[in-house]
Length: 311
Image (cartoon, rainbow, N blue to C red; front, side, top):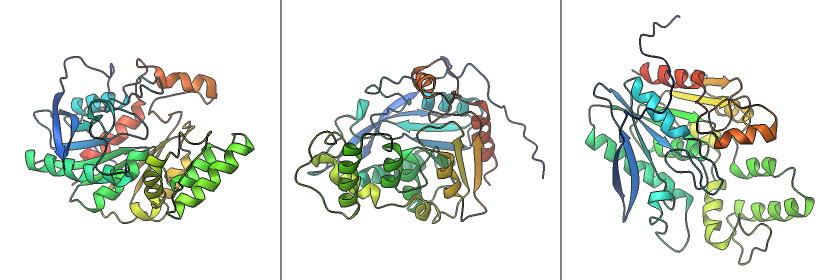
């Protein structure tokens, strides 16, 4: 079947100074999260964009990793140009949500899920006539999948989301590290996978698995993304780039492997930050800090088409 698509496909420049964010703080339990909202006048849909792992802010930038690529803000602007609204927010503990760090003794992965549930409730209360779609990037894909199970949303988009439990992904990502590092890290992951936290974690892996974050890792490892996404009964789009050096295409393929109604798009040449990048690792990494490099246009078009065709 050929679809007749009358909406505007992606245009560049991708950051438009005439598009203004409405910035606010959304209350989530006893904390508040900094949020940017862009709603075109004729919007029928609103996309909640969930950031990936680490100190990635709502624009897609990672100050600790020296990454300034504005991928989420670019996506929000491209959605706006196609009459689609968006909401993006700084995760608790990050950027302007830095003060929303602790709710208890340990930081928990499940707090991220609860935050999405409450933000969606805010969106649905403020914009009751709009369809709501969750779009999670990388770690945000799993967060969004689990939150979507608890919500009445209209669609879900996984952008470079992991398809395997995070401990398996970490083993793959650490495969080129020295043997002593891998041996110690793998033993810690085996323990946390079983829900057993350690009193002491020594360098060189203490930055990863410090005592404060062990509950977070243990909870994250307890989820299998395939099992979780299979619980969704809403339209699902899974996107991955062929040149993603962090999350390979096998992750995306696994996410759709048991549900023929899910849509899979593998974007040729696209990296983890949703932009084109060479496969050479040294040159590839440079693109993470290139704010002038546009998003992959095929990816944007696929996202817009999916959203516009949700009934």
